[in-house]
Length: 335
Image (tube, rainbow, N blue to C red; front, side, top):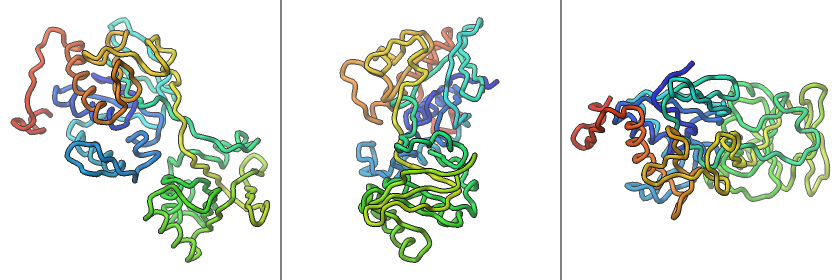
């Protein structure tokens, strides 16, 4: 059982910044996220997308912002439970909450902050009739352990940053990498597109465009994929793994069953402190709603700051919050 001061559900930018603000008040945090790494959408969907509305940064890549946030919170030593979805919330006799994940990991704290962005993310699956039969038997939608693919034959499908980045990375790991995209042009960063084209030109990967994977074959595990192209029709390729990277679809998931006030798939909060209708549970970032709500990372940072002040009072009702400026105390003075 993991015990902390604040359980943060969602390790995206708002969840990460919450750790910093909580650390200034000497509150410990533990983050839970269904994705295998911190950063939320910024890491999983568009790590190389430039963001222009972060104060002090005329432009910052999404992945770089996550890296900086992780560096910023490192002094406060947060805990992480990644690759597990928060499933159940239970109120304990001592007034604290217990959050149990999809893998049975239990977390206990007096405060929960839901910073789940748009909710849980589920992979967008290609319309292949028997794809479910091969899930975890050669079909993966998220790459968690790159070493799984060492010396294997890999087929990746997709045309965005994730597909391009993993193609480039796995070209150094796998025995053979094929990238399949239904168009000739890609949606990803230009430098990544150029690298993929260079890998294809040098024969280090197979680049198959104007095509898509339409079938999977195997007995108990994936052995082959069927690729249909506009020019050559259907062809069968030997493959140990098929990785369709078509992005993630947001869903509210188990959060909808936690007794919170929900409006249009978002959690209703009080803008005084971003508290929900359940005392001790807060919601910040894209997952909450209130009059005038703007779904901006900047706004989520503001919500996290005010929320932590209220969380401190909830945890220590007898204590007064001693607000201090980091310009005076630095960060080490808050550890």
